[in-house]
Amino acid sequence: MRSPTSQSRRDVLKGAAAVAVAASTAVATRGRAAAQGGGQPRARLDGVLRQAVDAKEVPGVVAVAANDKGVLYEGAFGLRALDGTAAMTPDTVFRIASMTKAIATVAAMQLVEQGKLSLEGPVPNIDPTLGSPTVLEGFDAAGAPKVRPAKGPITLRHLLTHTAGFSYDIWDPDTGRFIKATGMPGRATGKVASLRQPLVFDPGARWLYGINIEWTGRLIETVGMDVGHAKIAINDEGERIELHGAFHDRDFALALADVCERIIGEPLMCGRVVRV
Image 1 (cartoon, one colour):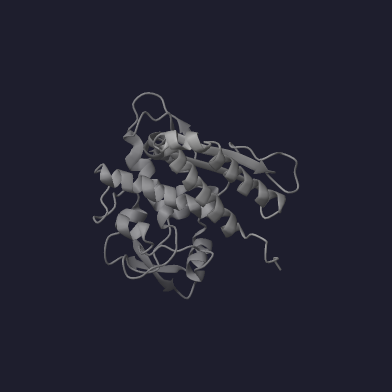
Image 2 (cartoon, rainbow, N blue to C red):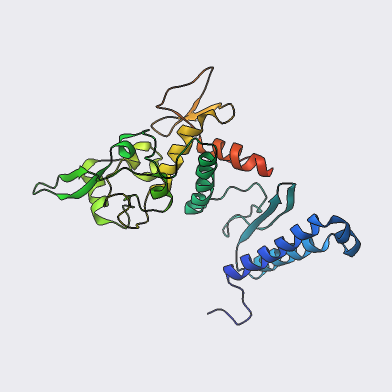
């Protein structure tokens, strides 16, 4: 049980966010901040994060605040792992799982603004799973999956709002059974083939948390190939390929991290997206 004075992780984040806003305000009003002590917001944010580590609310933490003018704050405290000795640093790589969905969504909407993707029309036919979707209706007596054509196309809005019909096998027994019956590779392999599963309902029929943003990421990789000058691409097996000269093979795509770096990170001057 936490003591009445103990902070939750949400408390830590709320406190850090509040101080980051203060830091941003101080930078925006540089003259006034200088007169009142420009280092105070940074010291306050350092204190919030260091206190959380000292109180063992978190083993370690990295915080960065930035706007279109550049980085406002950067700090790292604690250890990378409780059973290790390596210190947390600003370039520590984190696995943040579904929090990347927000980044991919922003990248997709950037491409909508640029006219490269449509929010309401059918998504580009970059793969039969998207271009000719099917719905899983069950299994026959022998255990083979039974599918039918979907009643309508998948749109980017469906993907971004988790209403396309895709599911996650860990929460949908029939999807798990389909993957086992067909011998599909697991999602952890990073292969595009691991996403080629049928829908569990028709696009737009209802909401279900599933691999929608994974497919959004694939759209971004494919449609965003002309963003900047790609040096690394991702093939159909999820392998990174070095590019040489002109490149137009639709079986390849610009790495998602490269697209996000070019259309999100670079405009915000947030530096490179680290890939592992």
